[in-house]
Length: 436
Image 1 (cartoon, rainbow, N blue to C red):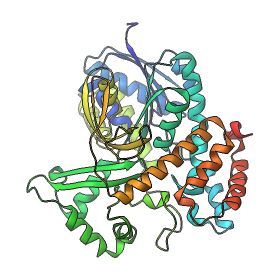
Image 2: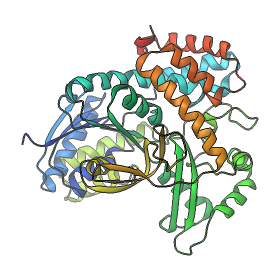
Image 3: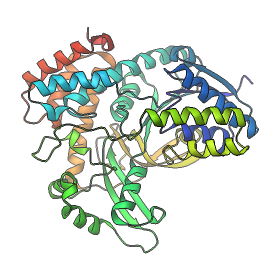
Image 4: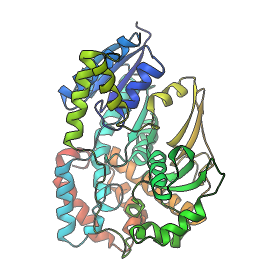
């Protein structure tokens, strides 16, 4: 049993990603592995581990299971670390919102971009930087997969850049961007989801629709989509970007404004649309308990597992990516990776787009975007590099350079913004030890 792959799942109870992780490990691929479930909620960690054990037993998988609240304990000799934790802290979010609102910068209350996104990234970067520091000592060859549901506050482009560039760890990210876009387009254009071919690319939290086609009829849906958006009063933000950049913003909701300068149509502040609440997690816990007690084949267990597996993202599959990196192959709809020319930004910057992984080799699939969008991606990816360095090293010079390059701060006095950031950082002092 000593030659089992060791996989650490940080955020084992993640609502959007846990179902696909469990399904791939114990049903699709039936991987013999040593799996560590790490979760701040110990009850949820135990329930997830025991449900996983029931799946493994039912499908004849030889595996070892551990659960803990201590990530450092789990990392020893890991082969892979899947980070699917929720990094959005309501107390931090509200404190930042109050500071920015009081000084008239309420439009900077953002999750990924602007001053709000900057602080969110610094806090997440502190945690991930500590994890990376530990990994360089005890599992430097391990692969990291960062998972982003879109509303969990984990800026996987910036963080992948930071962990890879400044710690030398092999890091990728996976999101549900293409899946969420396909679901939205199906409803918006009244085309069955299974008939849609959708390609999205750009940067994490700044992706655009490169292709939308009806696979059944062969129709290019982009002309119709642009026309309907520009005539739709509910889609004013998307419509302005069609006008500015001849590009359609990807995602179930248009969040690309977060990374751009304010306009009169920009929202007053970002609203979190995740749609996952306390009741959803209570139902998840109940289903995990039913699966544990009944197994995956008894009627109650079947019902519980079906509810679990259909409640998360279906196309974002970190275990499938790991298997491909370890010698198999797969195609990924939305992978965060270093640019290799498939998306036109400087080589080595982290981008998001479709990719093929074959026997450990990652290749971006060409994703044409408008020249205007490519130019902005170049600028934001540079900004991300500076912010990544600041987040994982505490370098204030990198922080200032990132703010200077940041298109979302266009029109904001940088000297004033630096003072505001200092005040916001003071409020998160316990989570930003590198800066103090």
